Length: 275
Image (cartoon, rainbow, N blue to C red; front, side, top):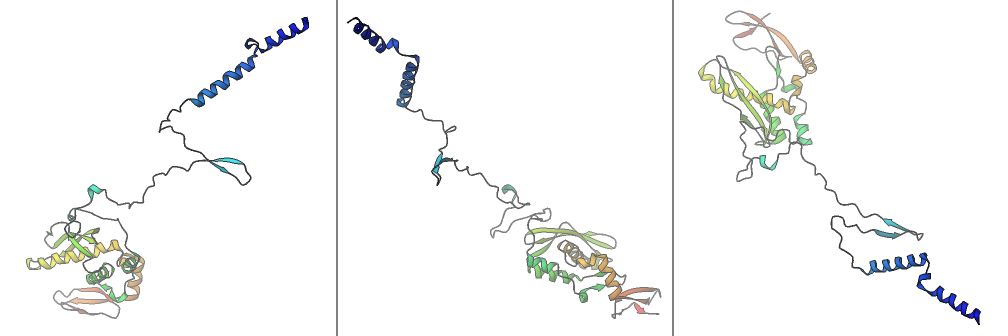
């Protein structure tokens, strides 16, 4: 009977809360905290620091791996023409949509766009030997009309033009004027044209000669007749297509050696051929 009372007392103490071990208490409080956290409403995350969703994909072997979110779209840089002008600096246009440019003081469109392949072939085509002329002093040249025809072939009539960059300057024996070559509404090059001038009645023709001379010089930048400035070509042409002949002035009787195209020795008054 005494043994039964002691056993009952020990069982009662084992079931008492004060007899719970520290491990059981910790487990109880941890379980309670987790339940409270699960029951509490979730606070909305800040849009700036919101976590991105993770996509979970299952591999064929059954292993689970996390797939990173797709990268954000980055702004790409659009290709721009090197000589592209800002919106505010583009020239105004007229009713027909043609830019209104003060060509006397503007270099609008320079180097903004190259010529097409077909235009390049037309501009850089080798000169025909029969088109090259020879001056008495041995200088070879291409007549001005040949430059105009080449420009018309490459750009078409009214696809190019010559713009004066200043007034004509009249000297004692020379007239000069600066011109710019404009192609397809874009500045190409400019050059100083010159022409001989001896009397007032020659002034109109001399001013027109300045334009022709400036045109030939501007066309160098387009490659037209580039052989005429090539020393190797000059030496070859002089050796194979030129010859010298002596002439005499009818009044002064002075003799000079003039250059001509080979087989085309012809002189006019006041000169005559002499030996």
